[in-house]
Image (cartoon, rainbow, N blue to C red; front, side, top):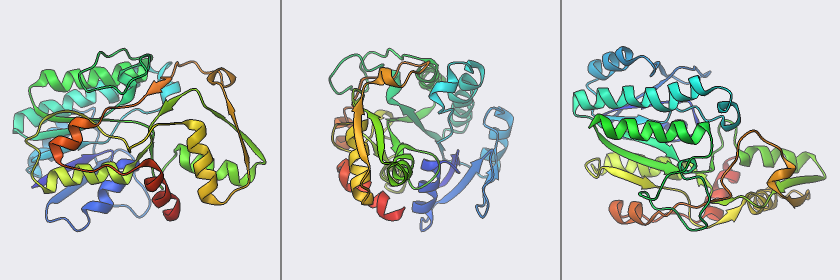
Amino acid sequence: MNILVTGANGQLGTEIRNLAAGSEDKFIFTDVNSMPGVETVYLDITNPDAIRIIAGSEDVDVIVNCAAYTNVDKAETDFRMADLLNNRAAANLAAVAAERDAVLIHISTDYVFGGEIPVPRKPDDEKKPLGVYGSTKLAGEQSILSSGCKSIIIRTAWLYSPYGKNFVKTMKKLTGELPEVKVIYDQVGTPTYAADLAGLIVGIISRRQTDKTGIYHYTNEGVISWYDFALEISRLCGHKCRITPCLSEEFPSNVQRPHYSVLDKTSVKKTFNIEIPYWKDSLKKCIERL
């Protein structure tokens, strides 16, 4: 099979690259940004003709869309770009997938729900995004579904890895440099180790399960606050920093974040016959890599 990966230089794309190194399938890694020492094909997914050309020349069977506008705060004042990348670009990829009878594996977010109900959210639960990021990601899902293409949409949350910018790397740095750090405790969810999510995606492809279309949820197992997460990061790093819990209101923001954002993963485990690692076990693996 020939697999086109967008946003290949991001956290998830990089982990997919790591896992695909020994694959019998052909992966074409694309991005709009280059990275030193990394071979990536330039692809602007806001240009449908560019997608069509590369998908045709590479005879693509599967498109994995890891590209997104993920700056939640900046999205509030940059709707045009957030919608372009999270919605219209997703529609472009879906249109090409439909033309080719290819499968689109698309990454979405827990932010489509809003976090008002304190129970794990199932894929078909009511959506109430709180801001531009969540609303544009939801619009992207809807554009994919309305295109008629074969799709697997995977919602995830709190993504981290040894690459790029993320909470784990930030806390590792801060708790190693400062005597005290304040961390929010009234936002609850579950972290996702990008290597684990990449394992699901590559596994779906290698096991030829791309016919199992639908919307799924994937995070690591467990439920914690950002405060709990920071405590464990600091402990695993051997740091002595004092971590103090605080309320969200102590960190003013122009966007309202979900207070309870736990995803129900029953369907993804049953459909793809997988076990999902506990968040502490995966965090330990990431810290060891760092």
